[in-house]
Length: 303
Image (cartoon, rainbow, N blue to C red; front, side, top):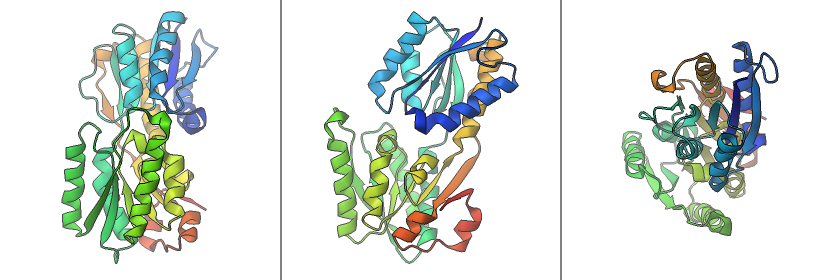
């Protein structure tokens, strides 16, 4: 009986819609959990604690001896799975960038930092009279210099002036120091009378998404972030990869491997679709009128 395990870097509540899309696509391909000699052994969630991912991977591989491991929720999950096995097939979902995976790996990339310049443009379109835009960054992330240069290049074309507040990742996130630094960054934006802030694509800010939205909203600051869930949590805007599409694509990989394909022969793909989400309730709270042009382009409006 083919068995798979699903591990996710986030929480079940956050991942529920994506995991449902994944399992529905598998079912359409003939793999229904508990039927047709197929079983999903378990779904394990790290709840935004990356240190748990290695244990989850080892549980599936060493204890349950699954035939295939699904590493969901981003690059950290894929890396943990890769470190745990070089033989069992791994399918990853929504990693930031992975053009050369190990031979036993394949999956789907989601555009993250690549979309930060477009997020900056959307903020400028929201309030074009505000020519200074705040940028919340994590300079300790790999590839930050390229990420920051792309944002600066777009700013010069708009044109707008950037005001950066940097919150580098801390070795011990459990201390609450990162949360305090994010809070202070938004206080600094408020003190400088900055009303627009780009929260750059970074797992650390996504992990603190329930802090980012209220920190911004309580100071009447309009923010744009990368994932839809951050708009659900109260951010004014999000623009990023449509994650349900990435998970459906990953399920197609799983079905192909269960039918005999080898991961090394299945090229990594990039999920092509993006979505713009607006939170009208937040806009009303911070007294920002969303232009008709943005409302017309929105894929979803949260009231």
